[in-house]
Length: 85
Image 1 (spheres, helix red, strand yellow):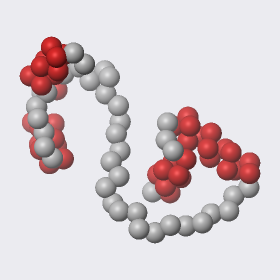
Image 2 (cartoon, one colour; image 1 turned 90 degrees about the horizontal axis):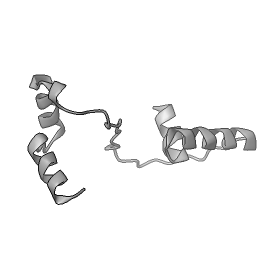
Image 3 (tube, one colour; image 1 turned 60 degrees about the vertical axis):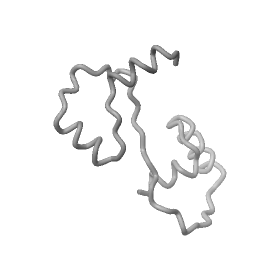
Image 4 (spheres, helix red, strand yellow; image 1 turned 90 degrees about the vertical axis):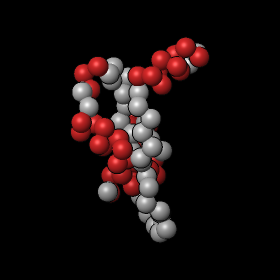
């Protein structure tokens, strides 16, 4: 972004410091004035991952999971975890 674009962005978008602030803003704001055409879904992984598993798969299933993860734009281990969730 150029300096002018950053300044425009800061003027148009509120500085939200927490999920609660963002939720409150969305609940009360008129979002029709915002260009959300470039918005993308974002998932935040907040919970600590303190357990691991070892999973044995056939090569075909492993390859299929990896291909699906690529199509989803995710690392394959995260793709598996999100599928299980």
